[in-house]
Image (cartoon, rainbow, N blue to C red; front, side, top):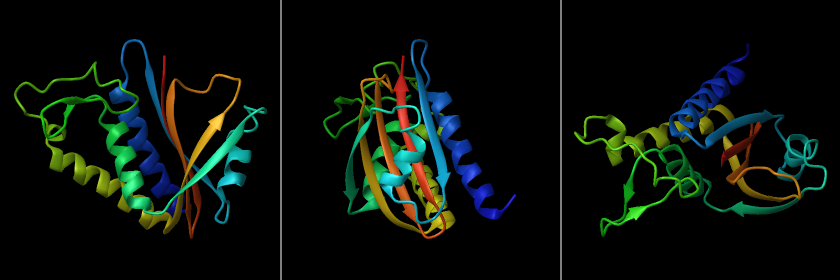
Length: 174
């Protein structure tokens, strides 16, 4: 196994673990990182990853000028949907497709991920691992429209880098 495959496998394993952690009785999360050859652009990635299963699909592509800010926000929303989140006015927020109404409450504040700084650090480390593996050049948000069922809620991205292109799927379905 080459070093890039190993690195991407570690990242995908972390995403899979968080998908399981966020799962509820009546719906499951699906977080996946699919590696594609370097030089694959967003349109080519969708033809490879989704068109074989969704032959009627159309795609809208939204380049994200600040890949770090865009990815940081989405990973924070999705990875920690299992926890209650609050705004500055102590009003509950709903992340990861609004599913935080069913969350784990850390009544003793004993778990490390109950701390905002620990969540921030974890997401930063994940983003650093992605950048170290592929040397990120561009992030594109992809919106798919299809008559076929895909997910109840999702965010898809194509992450283009010097060493590989990645298709990142963050979704939830019942």
